[in-house]
Image 1 (cartoon, rainbow, N blue to C red):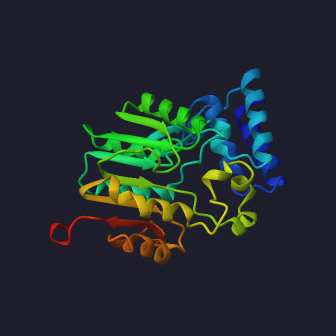
Image 2: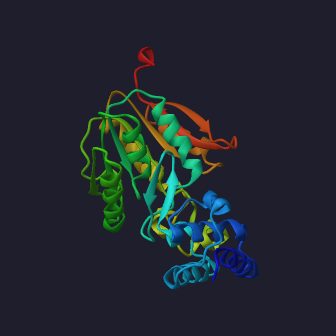
Image 3: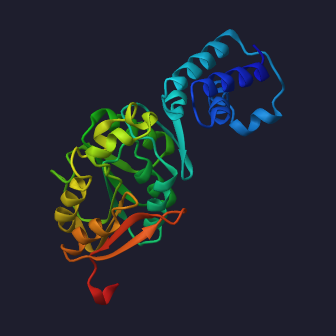
Length: 278
């Protein structure tokens, strides 16, 4: 099998399986097998794949046809400025979450807490962008924490990780608390794309309730973990801005709802600094 044959055959198989973006996904899988970037495929000679490469590619295409996310097949996702290991134990970092990273980097802080860290993508991106800072990432899943520790070591940041159910057992103070909690309501799970619903960890997607459970927990306890001028930043679903903002206002925070690049509500900023210090 030559490179061009692999591209054509992989794309055709994914299209037949009803995969949107079949050509893009086939290229991502093939590039990962060849250990190059997808954009390099256009300038790479039409070489013959080795037997092992052909086997890896065919296995990857078969997995994608079954709706396994490409990041799980290739084992990584590019997010912000780094490449992160991804497994079935972690949520796949998404581009819209970069709005949370951007908002966090617009604030002054030295010590940050990431609740429900998953791959560690948010925490590690923040620490890598601001040398000399430290952070703690928590997650209820020890398997996810192992992935986060791997990513932190490889990227080289001063991050610690511990197993915890949201704020339980966590001691501050932190200048900033960030989180991308499960915000999909249980009744909405059936409507999710099968790539997400059937392959990513359910506990990272839904609270099995109305989608606001994690925000209630964070809003109720976060002030006790913050330094005097501290703040919390949480990612939200695009229809949850008003509800999540109300939870933090009830705890005495000054609140703003920030958009993502598509203009949708994406991040709630809860500032607990005294009014005169804002």
